[in-house]
Every structure is written in structure tokens, then in C-alpha cells.
Image 1: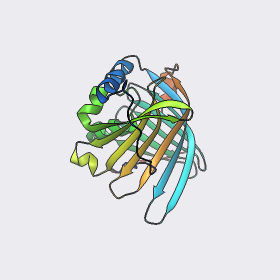
Image 2 (image 1 turned 45 degrees about the vertical axis):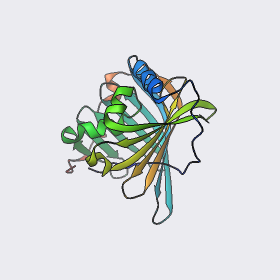
Image 3 (image 1 turned 90 degrees about the vertical axis):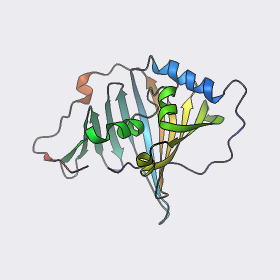
Image 4 (image 1 turned 60 degrees about the horizontal axis):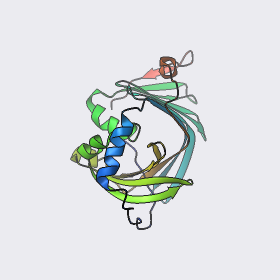
Length: 221
């Protein structure tokens, strides 16, 4: 199963302030994860294909609930719905009125590492699954953020995503930006704005409702 991944070239990270060490930052993520329930945000996703020097950007909205539920409504340039509910992943393309359903059981651990990364992820979980480096404190969107570099410990995971850079907002401990580097050298950036922590989200927000006459398929993952 392919997972598309992220990042732009960055300058050398600033020196980490004395008040932040990797240990204290991971402990802060542990504490913050305890009361994370949900998130809503606008997102912009930019995919860069290095070989042909191609860049494409799409935007939309995301909602996440900590019980393995996520919905992304891409609106520009082409509408698309990505719905995660438990072990099922749906991708709906209204242009052809078709929805593809994937069974995530075999890939659940890897899916959780990427699709839910930063959304209430404890520091202990990051330390378990990645080689974690604290790159420093920066300003992004006029917010103080901590930048982490994550290298998957699993060889299987590295075959998909070789490295991740994640910027966590110090005011709410949610990601402002994530850069995913794919094993083939391409990357993608996901940037979040208008982030709301713990909005009230119901089960109805994550139900797979599709238009009448939709074509349903179950491609092999």
C-alpha cells in the first residue's frame, strides 16, 4: 500500500533553547495527548515530484477524532473525500461517482503512524516508532513551534516514508505543518490552518454517505 509523503528544503535548524530538550518536549506531548479528543482544520497539501520538477497543490478541510476516525474533504482544484473509520478507508471521487474502499487491517500500525501523526500522538509513541531528533524552536505562521525530525525504525515503514519533519504548535501541541519524504526522493507538505482543538464531532460526521448510484469498488491494497 502506497503512502504519499512530504518536505521543503530548510535552512540549518536553530539552536534548541535551554528550556526545550528532546526529553522535555516528548514529555509535553505525552501530557497533551491525554486530553486530546478531536481536531478540525483547513489544510493545504503540496506534492513535489522531483524528477520532473512538478508541483501540485490541493486544499480542503480535515476533521479527526481520536477513535480512529478521520474525514478529509478536498475542495480545490478537484473535489475528493477521504474517510477513515476504524479499519476501513474510503476514497470518493465525485467526477466519476465512484468510491474505493480499502481494508486497513494488515496496515493499521503503519496507517496510524502517518494518517494520525501529531493528532494526540504521545511522545512515548514517537520514541517507540521513530528515531526522534528535536531540531529546534521556530516561528511558523507567527506561532512558536517545535520542529521534530522523525526517521521510522521499521524497515517496512522506511520503504514508504524515509523521513518526516513535523512542526508542533506550542500553544496547542498540534501540527502546523508536516513534511513527508518518500523513499524515491519525492515529498509532500501538509500545512494546517484555522486549527480547533477538541471541537464537538458526532458519529454522523464520519458516516460513509455517498450519492445514489455511486459505483463501489474494493481495490487490493
